[in-house]
Image (cartoon, rainbow, N blue to C red; front, top):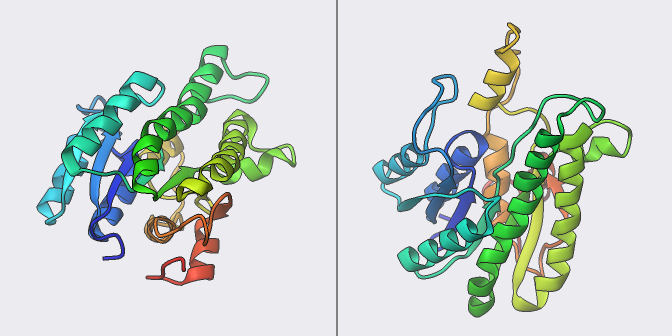
Length: 259
């Protein structure tokens, strides 16, 4: 119960890593706002809605609130933050998880997909972060976790593609916000899985062309444990950095806190 009494918002939490993170934070005692666009399943290969995630938390004895939110719309982000505060009285944690990944390389990605990636992966992080800052500043505390990717590391060596470019920008934004918000008691960090994690989205993408998902794709246990640990950060203990899940666990240990 490392997060008992805390209130967390997780974007993109209808399925996949967002859903797994929301469930973990709830299990650690946080009330969790489930924010995403999906209210109804459109494709059975991509199951999960904001209401499904909220129901799982509530059935386990936790507290949750499902809010439809398109993070690329600043007005919807502001409405999300207002609803969270109205429901739970505060906002302690924001996990900027919502993201999209378009097909193609730098020379072949469609312009509309390039723009979509930046609207969601970059602008969405900016808008959602801005929406919670006033509440966190008033409280004098808060943690913002921006989800990055090893694709960001690959950009420097010519890999990572357009998706990696958006994640490099997210990590730069993490450092910029961390510096600006530290005096207000708000920590800002970036988290990335070491590699692929078994999610419905990964299974859909991997098997769409008829390929079999490798048997050794890890589950989300390390990733969500690292997220829970990072939720205990403060500007004086950890801010302005981008860490992979295994690095977080190596530093602080399973079940650990940042002190």
